Structures are given as structure tokens and as C-alpha cells.
Image 1: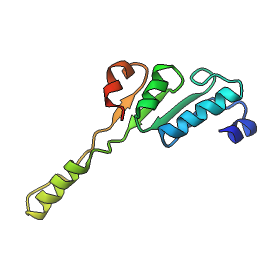
Image 2: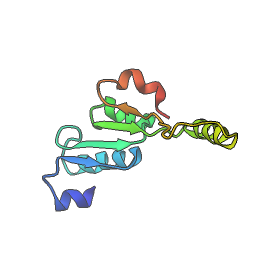
Image 3: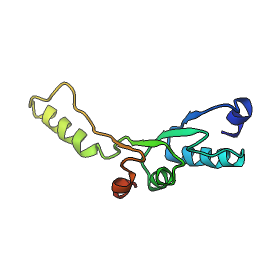
Image 4: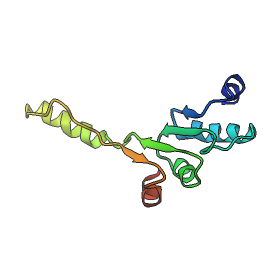
Length: 111
């Protein structure tokens, strides 16, 4: 993030691939004298407690929790397939989206 800000000081949005990267970006943005969440919007993936706290603080724009709890669903589908049962062509794993509109009631889902 430090390098990005040096090369592109006018950046207004950043995507990081996990909440820890987002928290690091927030620190770098602050160190550069900018305000995360106001000068630069950050979105990420994970939905950790730290990420949700950053959303609540107004420093992180959004986080998507790509469910890491898909194991039971995947095993259920594999079991049905192995038994010769009909399974749908598409099995959706639901993700959770967090932003300022739902972070207060979603804190329990951060891991």
C-alpha cells in the first residue's frame, strides 16, 4: 500500500484479498496522512472480527465472508452423488456481505 500511494497518490479505492491486508492498508493510508474510509475506500474478503471492527470504525468499506464453512455441504453433496442420488447441477455456497448498514448486527459472525 505504501508503494501504491507513492506511485498513485490520487488513488480513491483499493481491493485487498483478505482482512489482514486491508488492516495493513489502513495503517499505510494513515501513515501517508490520509483517512481510510474517507480519502480511500477499501473492500476485502474474510469477515474477521478485526475487519468488522474496521467497518464499524468507518475505516473499511466492506468485507465479504466467503464461507469457509462449506465442508458439510460439500460432503453432503458428494455423499448423495456417491449413492447415485440426483443432485442439482449448481450447489450454491452462500456468502455474507458486511458494510456499515449491517455491521452492528453481524459482529457475531466475525471469526
